[in-house]
Length: 242
Image 1 (cartoon, helix red, strand yellow):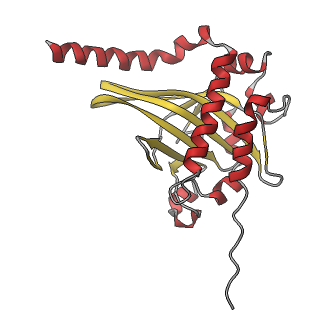
Image 2 (tube, rainbow, N blue to C red):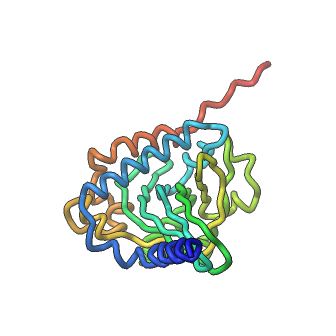
Image 3 (tube, helix red, strand yellow):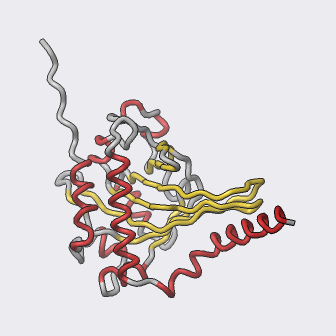
């Protein structure tokens, strides 16, 4: 009886997870949006403070955008899925300028025998301008609108495979202290216009935030932008010994 109760509870959690995108719109306030930006900055810092396991800086220095989704919840009982909210920040490699953050959700479902629940931090490195343009659609599918692969980790991207380094989006995950590349084929990314409105105090589209620079990064985003600027500066090249 106890096992059945637990199983039904897990199933209810999984179903609630899959329905979460429909339920979040009514209860967004600025404090919730600001907290999401702060947590994204913390996630980035913790990942990059372990250089041998983090995202290679040469990838960040050339990236067209970075997406950070803290605490993506993955749950399942036969029917499973994952859902989370986070931010995407546009990058101009030539100037190392980062845009104000735009809010997005990520979600994916799956069917199969699976039990359990866990929380994972996800980071996506969008490598090219066409990937950013695709993100501005109402729904962006990883593996469909842009190729995606698990990204290399370490101080340099040279250790990555050809498949990864030819992909438009490189994906990373951190769960229970472990950090590694992850495959996210089929995951869907959608803009959160209600979060943008709550955060900026007026209606703004993702295009206006990320590409048209209609708004400057607010004070609450300074830590995140500073961390991105810091880690997207290429490491100085070592002088060769003669």
